Length: 196
Image 1 (cartoon, rainbow, N blue to C red):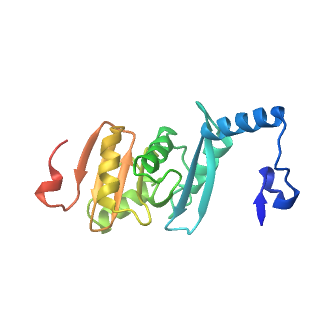
Image 2: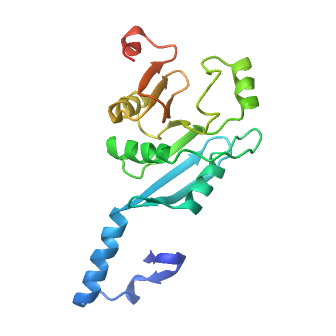
Image 3: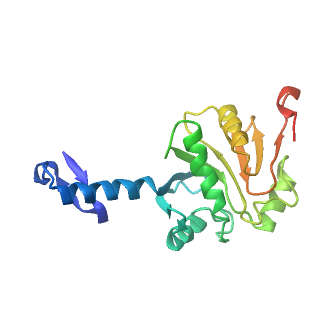
């Protein structure tokens, strides 16, 4: 059996001491506490087929190098342009996985940042794309989670009350953003469109 140790080193389980001194136990408890303060995201980009598993925040401190990696990961897949995302959006994603009972669960990214040109192109060829989309400001993400009903995901996002939530049932994704709290449902039955 292999264990993955910090810094990518591999250690055989037979080489790990099972008994710990009290100072080792204290150190272990401190590390466990640090892990509890780590905010991690596991994302899959549906357009680039890239995957990222990253700790983006420890306690109240965002990690600048991790934010830069996430910004690149969420780049406009048409142009490869990168824009700095509002890190509160990452907190929404992380909290969303917890609220549906899958903390750290993988999130499929349908859309992250869009340049104004990409946004206009989408508006010309599809419906349901806002002219002044928050995707252009790097303040919105469209997503789904494998194995999670998208309606359930929408309900969990609405319960967070942390920004806008859009629901696109025919395309099987939701939109979350850091704008004002509001909701919409694109091409939905009346029972799902009430409230704003």
